[in-house]
Amino acid sequence: MRDQLYINGQWVSPDLGNYLDVIDPSNGQRFTRVAAATEEDVDHAVRAARRAFDGDWGHSSGAERAVWLERLADALEQRQDELAVLEVRDNGKPLPEAQWDVADAIGCFRYYAGLARELDPRQDSPLELPDPRFRCRIRHEPVGVAGQIIPWNYPLLMAAWKVAPALAAGATCVLKPSELTPLSALELAACAEQIGLPPGVLNVLSGLGSEAGAPLAQHPQVDKLAFTGSVPTGSRIMSAAAQDIKNVSLELGGKSPFIVFADSDIDAAVEWILFGIFWNQGQVCSATSRLLVEDSLADTLLERLVSEARRITIGNGLQPGVLLGPLVSAGQHAKVLDFIREGRQHAQLLTGGHRPRDLPQGYFLEPTIFLDPPLDSRLWREEIFGPVLCVRRFKREEEAVRLANDSPFGLAAAVMSKDPQRAARVANQLRAGILWINCSQPTFTQAPWGGMKQSGIGRELGRWGLENYLEVKQVTEYLSDEPWGWYLKP
Ligand code: NAD
Image 1 (spheres, rainbow, N blue to C red):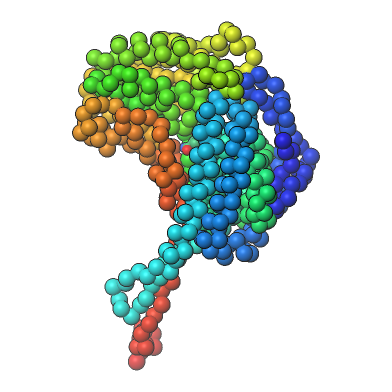
Image 2: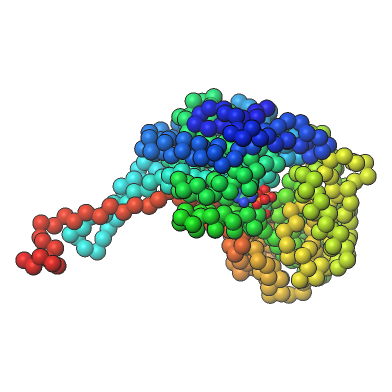
């Protein structure tokens, strides 16, 4: 366990000597502490990242950076099991989910190593111009120093989604993990140290949003802000970026719909609906938390859903067979219970809604399903970020599309039907960045990730993730011996 900050390739104590307790969400007990960075630490980290960028790293080739990314992936891989257990203790998620996350994070570093290599032949690509007296070439140059702020629901994976493409592009990073789940990001820093990544290329600062995140967002030497988190914080980050016109990308919240037509296979529907809302305790930005079921299927589907939800094993994520761990924190537990308390007044509670009786410690909550929340209720419209599914019925396809699109968010959406044309037609009409047909949540490093409306700006993952950290430069050259002849007449 590390209670220092990783700045300029070294572990250093926090400037003000502040520390934060790290709580195990399965029992509510403190199990370690981390350093709490403040403004001075942020300044040191940003300056280190600046020096690294202005030095060799910013001028390195994609092929050179690919080697570093592969070494980072190897270092993570060597500690794969240990990292998964750490993630469970920090976040609460069941171990198989944490193992999946760690493997995905490693895969993300390897994937961007490949894209880093592909960058070199893309440099100086010629662009045909309509005027033969000119020659133009296009360069892709790294954006500079990236300030990266991430949430607590996928601690290592969100770090990988940010750091891997930034390093591949040739940017340098100052990463601030969530104060609730800082441990795996600090281990990523330890991997960087182990492989001898040049000082300043990756800096990791644990700390509070207000004390470390805000000064990072405001720092004048940060060129790019990449943020994943809630809409209110995203709005603050965007305001900070606006002060000196920083490049900014935002991955924010969601309240994603899942439309299930009556011709769907019922087992497949139940499986994907449960996966879409109870995976990671429902603390998933793309969770399909609004279920729209065609009327004629609704009674049968709901009966199955309720009985399967009641069979989900809840407990400490390290215990074999557990499918639902605790929520991440006391605050998140209280927030979700508050939604449930309010929801009971307006909607029918079909199952759940309580802390399980046999788990008096920790932040556990039963899988919860509400029927018919009013369209203007907080339950239906706001992101709950917990294991709470809200269900409404629909009669016609257009009604389903209208209800699904009636949201301030537009991150993801899912459609299930045995009619491929209908599924494709509906998918094309939904205003969201990620559409799943006959499934919910599968995420691939190769495919673009991000949302419309208040769900954010820009796309991560795939080649789009790399573009986030690249500036496009045109170099246009006048080739002709003829004078231009505008002011100086021949
Ligand atoms: P949050 O906004 O509370 O915090 C996110 C990060 O921002 C944390 O590191 C926090 O310390 C930092 N922060 C807080 N205040 C700050 C400030 N004033 N200035 C700078 N940084 C600050 O979000 P959270 O509760 O950690 O995460 C949950 C949210 O993240 C949900 O809304 C979820 O939908 C969203 N999320 C989105 C995606 C996506 O890809 N779209 C992925 C995961 C999570």
